[in-house]
Length: 238
Image (cartoon, rainbow, N blue to C red; front, side, top):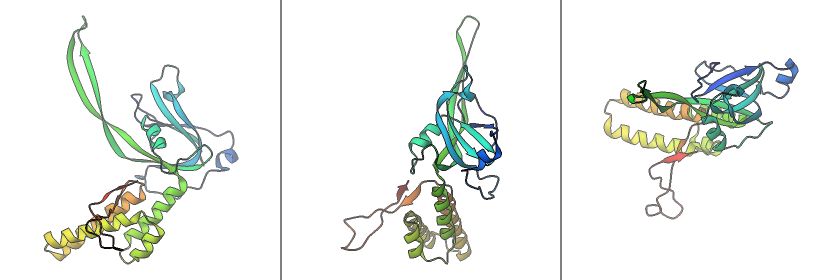
């Protein structure tokens, strides 16, 4: 995740040096090597709240989350961070080991108006500005999701065991079955069909690993016989 920031309210980070090396690492979990594209920050939650950007008196209204990492305290800024904490599935509190992940971007439309010297509106410009989409959960959530993704990626793994260990994968396997049915009906070439299913599996595993919402299979009471679950169109699991 890049240092610096956008004062218009987009996501950004600032770093603070620790008072001592031992203070920074006392409670922070060790972060395993991750690809550069994996925007995951891990550490101990120190504090969060609404504040002027970078704590400057004249800064734009924003929201901050501060974590203590192995390299010192790090403060992230962005209005979306408040929503990520409010909607967090694990509801971390100060002192918890957490992960903060930036997943893609949600476009934000910024409108600027230019006026003449006498105040008349001359032009209006609309610009779709990217804004980070954040997920904030306790660290074990991301560890569990990584293990679930590993199981889902392995086509030889037992589905029953994978779902028993990771119940959130039930909808992902439902989606795989639905994709296999579509592929069987519409893709004649066996090689193309196999590549399609591999792509679907990897997409589901990637979403699982990153903490994104997953499909969830629902029962159709009118079609299910007693003791039998019949999945309908999948929804989205949190």
